Image (cartoon, rainbow, N blue to C red; front, top):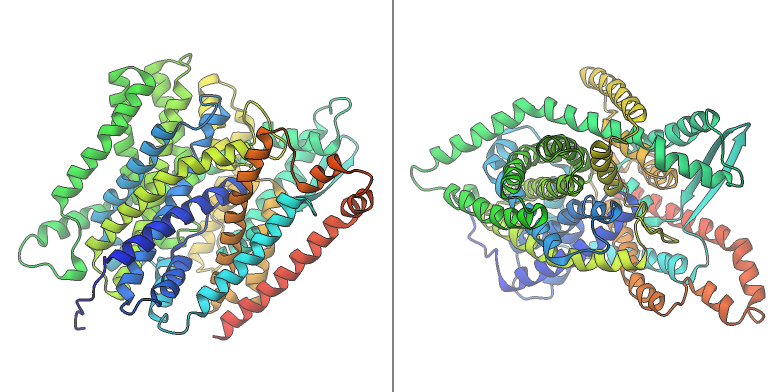
Length: 640
């Protein structure tokens, strides 16, 4: 194939890529804190890029690839930050987000993720039989993007729908954020419901039926089995409602089954991938030694190894200084920096390999981060002592850095797969990946500050009325604090490990039989840990995917549709947070129906009575309409 010297890093591509990185970082920060997961932004970024660059006289596929590379970095980095940094609020180390250390963790962790995976590019992307599903899909979108820009129009349309639905729920309050029913049989209690969120349906539509079913199975196993059994063995406090008692049992006891499953699943991931990781590292360094002789083809040109080592050193210096500022002991800060390098490299390799297997959206970043925090907690407890109050936050900070590295590592290799298919220059993509990481890192801390002030996080010392669940951050906080304080409910953790062992055995059998259906541990573990209402919403989207046959199609309409819903709802959630913060400072309550009730109760009594009686049904009907629309789009995706 003749190599075409098309321009790649241009002024418009850089500006657009960094702008999208900031927007997607903010949007996915909200989505991750709300739903416990983020979705790869490569495809929507590619579509938006094609739509906007079309207005310029000169543009090409490699420019579009550069834009999606930078843009998707913001989304990936958001996952690394929101899965871990809120844990410092939850355990009480911070009462608000500190911009400087949060930004250092994000930038340096993200940079390490890019740098650690560059030597693995050839072995994992060119030589290994890995699919990198979002990378291939993004390449298909780019290659087919010389059309009329229907994809951008679809993203905008569905984003408006998702945003309006979110406004009606969060700002106006026409219908509640979730609908839940409870039940009891003797002392046994249970609950079931659904979160009224099109974004959750969109997540299921994108990740597919397999993952969404396993999430639902985890949720049902917890809320319809573990909680009833646990409640039967204990006495409900007098005066406590059933829903509150069920939530209390879930928060303090049964969700640790999910923690145990995540821990075992993360360890199993490392064990299973050890040979592939070592082979990838070895072949990567061999490739660099081999390419030192003679000219290197443009499409095989990476950042030189000398620059990689120098940049790794530059990234570690601010991390070491931050660790030193945090623990005030140089030798402990040095130990933390060494652990960061070792764990960061190992888990970046794991995350990159897993991204090739299951895609960035399904990449079990939380599992490897939990494993890191467990290891770091025991390590720091050995050198600092159990009674040292800085132990849990120190473990979380290392985990946050490693989590950012692992998240960016998976995204970097996914984008490099896209670049490999469209014959882009890897070196230029790697530079833009780092630029996108830096841009996203600068905005994530302010977004976290805004969301914390507007909503708060579940589990924080001072509760708020409508907190964001922040499920992974709660896991990280619980594990680090539980190990140091000796208060981790090990019975439930061990049950989770047993569940994980059974799932691993089943998955091994299914793999040996060549089954298309698999049982990845971390999907079930997340379902156990999340509120059941979230898993039900994701399952609806996965069911639509199955019924429409979207997973077997070559089209991407369902992905664009889901990406639009997610983007619209997430951006609206952030936008609504601004008036929430401003009005809360003046003692004014939202949603607006509550404000109206306080201002003119008699005049609006009829409207408020209707909303309280029928608002939830209206929300359900509209959510059902969105589900039908999603099914139609998924069917059209199959037909194309």
